[in-house]
Length: 197
Image 1 (spheres, one colour):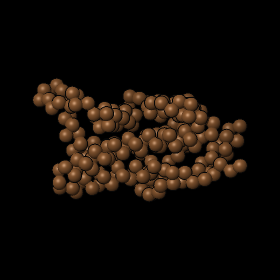
Image 2: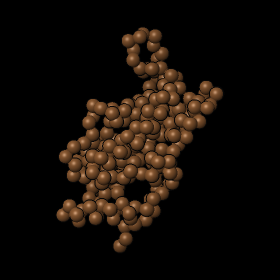
Image 3: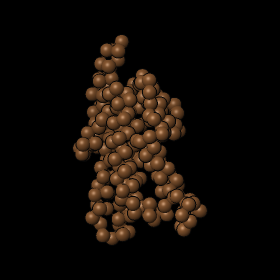
Image 4: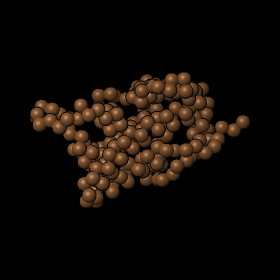
C-alpha cells in the first residue's frame, strides 16, 4: 500500500496571504483598509505557524498519532516537544527570539484579535501601561513584518534543532503552491531511520 499522495498546504497559502497583506498595506492610503491588511497579516502569520507544525507531526509516521490522541495540545507545546520527539537533545530556547516573538504572535492573535475582550482594550493615557491601544496595534506595519519574519525564523530553527528532519518549505523562498506530495517526505524519513539504525 502506497503512502504517497497530494496533500493540501494551507501554510503556504497563509504565508503568502500574510506577506501580500504587508506589501499592500505599505502602499494603502486609506487608513481603514491599511488596518484591515495589517490585521489580516497578523492573524495569518499565526495561522501559518499553526498549520506548519501540524503538517510536521503528520509527516513523521512514528509521531503522527500524538496529535490525533491529543488534539487540544497547545501550539507552544507542539513546537517545544517536536525536536525532542524526533531525537534531538535540545529544543527551542523559550527566552530568546524566535520563540519569544512566536509567543507574542500567539498572544496577539488569541487575546487581542480572535478572542477580543473589550474591558482589556480601554485606551489608557497612563505611560506605565505598556499595551498599545487596539487601533494602534492594527496600524503597526513593523509588527506585522516582525511576525511574518518569525515564520521563517521558527521553521529554520526547528530544522536546525532536528538536524534537518523537518521541512524547510519552498514558500519561504516565495513559491506559491497549495498542495505537495508527501511521498518524498516519508521516503526521506525512512532513509534517515535506516541510516540511524
